[in-house]
Length: 379
Image (cartoon, rainbow, N blue to C red; front, side, top):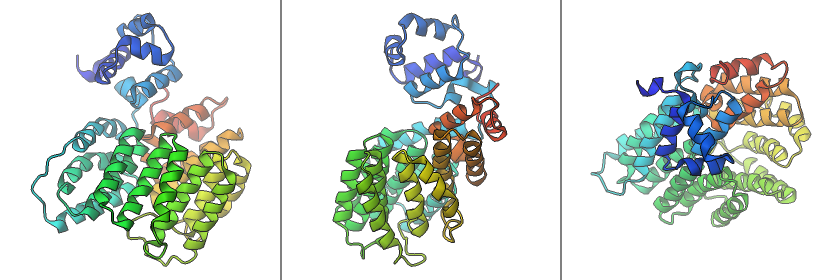
């Protein structure tokens, strides 16, 4: 029997062993008995309810599709993306110094990796990152920082926040005290800490980095740090500070010239307005967030945002619609996100949970039902 033919209980057991967990440890984290886990793994107890599968997948830090197997309609390239995470983990665990590669070649690989990320091609990026991390270990600081930042950003998308924080921390170390490189790395630190739910730490880290960087040195990086700090403040429930920081970022964005973003932050007026919507949703003011949403997508700079930015934003909007009970609006936002960057919807564990919640509606909106089938949440 191949691994693809394994029953779901055996798949759970395989991932449990891979995560170095005993049956008792898994049972404790699920709030169930060891006997329940044992019977489930042996197939004596059926595991056929998706919410339970999702809960187990979250504890094991895998995508539910890794447990469901090939008998579910697969999300395109999702399983490959998850399987490839071990390669990234291994590359981050290496500390040797391989022979340096030609700088021009490494720079081209970095450029390709950025474009792959910004277009939302996450499975492809998972495949190339281990080699890129190896190639940049002996490269100049700026290239190493970029490689770690790309890695951290991708790992956040794929639900590996702890590993994302490690990559972001490596970026800070690679910056070597350079104020601009350190500030760019601090953006990744802030994103990873927020993904871990450490909003106050993210706020402190991004504000400290912004304080060490004069806006004229790298305005797009400085503005992005302020937006990350605003999102962290919102996550901490501090509406006043979130508003102040967003306003400060808006002042910087007003002076940004086209193309003045060498560190690929995507910063500008549209990014600030996007952040205002997300801040409002984070603070629980979903009505205000949705009121601003329509205006934002009509802004001239909206289409210039990377596909990843636009799709991730629509996912946030879907959550806001879901919070106010508008399942059709939530489904529509996810369908729009899927059209822009399919992997943003189909490869992110958090987004798949949103799809599952929307699809449970009676009747489920057509768009959500189709996405649920595409990502393997229905038989």
